[in-house]
Length: 301
Image 1 (spheres, helix red, strand yellow):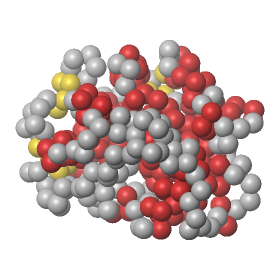
Image 2 (image 1 turned 60 degrees about the vertical axis):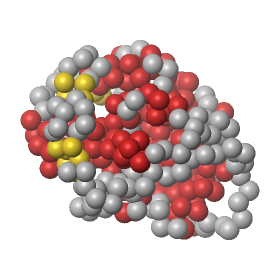
Image 3 (image 1 turned 180 degrees about the horizontal axis):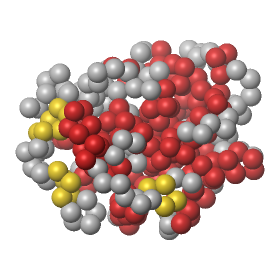
């Protein structure tokens, strides 16, 4: 079972400082230990950083107009995202991703905004919204440690490259644990590709509902954004078609996908009343070379 891995190279943060040595074994236990050892660093709000301008850019994306429609909705999302609090080093990681022109930057902000919108449709003014926004914003930090060519690749991944992709939840979770300590972002990083037990890595138990929200929001954001293997993205309805199919196939949590559809419909009524139809009416790309990364059948240790 894929429940741990040996690092094939050192993990370095954006300042050039080592996070984990080559040959280190990463596992859920190692991540928990890194969180226990993490220093208590001072934190500040996202609104105090240059990243604040990216919130407005995300809320203005046309593809999300049905999710983020209305001044009251955008104000609530804006407040939640701007109130995210991290140590400076985490904001520096996000700024480094932005400077690199990486697709990970837009993906991070879109995932956070979609996840917050979904949660607000479910529980309204929950106290945990800023923590969910923070977790969603950095859930894919492990991808920053991959060779840039893997983010530009059009063809199907070879075995070794697929293993590197499959390692990114462990890498991201360990990196975040070493900086943030016990934080929802650590759980989101290690669990967002769980796919109802069909994905990776192997977990001892199902993730929380909030992590499921981040997982579905991440998938929706990825489907609605251009990628090298899919230059023409799905529209919002087409992305929901894909997620509904995955939910019916047991690869995504059905109630969480229903919550996304409910949010797209304006958040009125009961999300449990949403029903998945068999007909697919959304826009799908003409060229889509994406294939889900298969979880390694065995640990790399």
